[in-house]
Image (cartoon, rainbow, N blue to C red; front, top):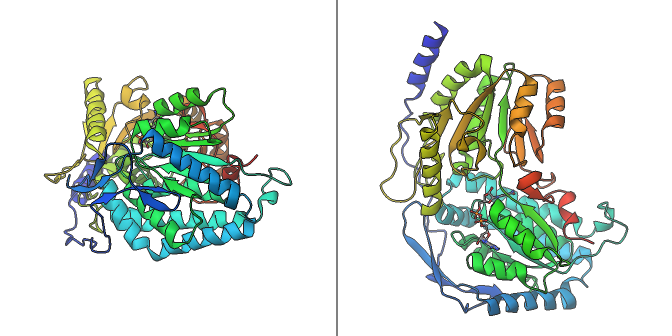
Length: 489
Ligand code: NAD
């Protein structure tokens, strides 16, 4: 009886409200036909072979981007070294803070432009770039501006010193936010930086370079060089960098760890994840459903800390799944610039191919695949929100990071079993717990080997709280007071 009722409700709810499209205008952004490298305060030509960045939602070419050659990498590191020695390391913290506050305010002033550009280049929905990414980017600069003249109170000695030049390499899933996580603490601590954005999403980093000019940041304090893996390798391998900060895949992180072993470079690695989102039978179910949806479908699931493994207590699995399917039926997939869109485009053809491949493997290994009926646009890279039931811990979709809108559902009976299953992964970045009992939250949080544990919520980010992993999710922390440690000695 109960089951029938749930099935009926799910069917009714799957009918979406008809919404008129509400597209954000592109006219606020001025995308140039080509972009150079930002070195020593100016845009300069690159010595490598230029490449194109495209819109993942339309496949239209947006701009041609310079590729930094080894010589360009060297030029950028030299500019950062000069700026460090002559200007930035000598500047009192309260003066550095002024620049960071200025950058934060310009980000707020130009937030709409940044959000639209991020959505065009990355494919993420405008409501996310506008309401989540860009506000948190500004918040990071405000937050670390506040630390710049108080470093002696951060808990790292009475007179902590900057390291020097930081080489920073970031991925494509949160282009501007990852830039902020890297640049804000580095600058606050007195370091200068050379940052390389991902090859598929360079545009907002290049707009950030313009913001540095607008803020009159001394030349060479921030350098932005574009290119793919080779450029990244040359940057982290440069002999005159003091710090390597990398966010990206575990494979590349491992290669970087090897390449810097035996050098004096300090390293922070923020890598992949396969988080468990654990729902107990006493959880507020509707809230948990929202948390599950947010945990795996936010940013198309291109989130290192995505709750990609749902662990649900067996006694409520049927009810929860019915509600979850109903909610998934209301998600809008489509134009990233439409303010109604919940799920945008997959960032690249390569990423889409990986998501498809792993989903096919899930089916081949015997898991049950389900997606709501949804029309996908004819051009661009798209994948419907998908869940797999009947997943065992041995399945590849339960072990490997898919980095897409794909949820694997597993069940458990006891808290001990939940902990065991949650920890049964080479990763250890994040986890979620949904229960009414505070004592259970504390007990679980103690048992889970994850850098961040959310309780009755998911994917909450704040500049004041540290973020980072255990095991193959990397080491070092970004955010909060802890985020300064990687940039101080
Ligand atoms: P990726 O490792 O392929 O690329 C990341 C960056 O590294 C890019 O800028 C790329 O050009 C560069 N790169 C590639 N090869 C390199 C090399 N040999 N040396 C130096 N740089 C190199 O990862 P991706 O596909 O862009 O990003 C997705 C991955 O990032 C996922 O695994 C995700 O979990 C992870 N990620 C982690 C966090 C975190 O905070 N832990 C945050 C976001 C993304």
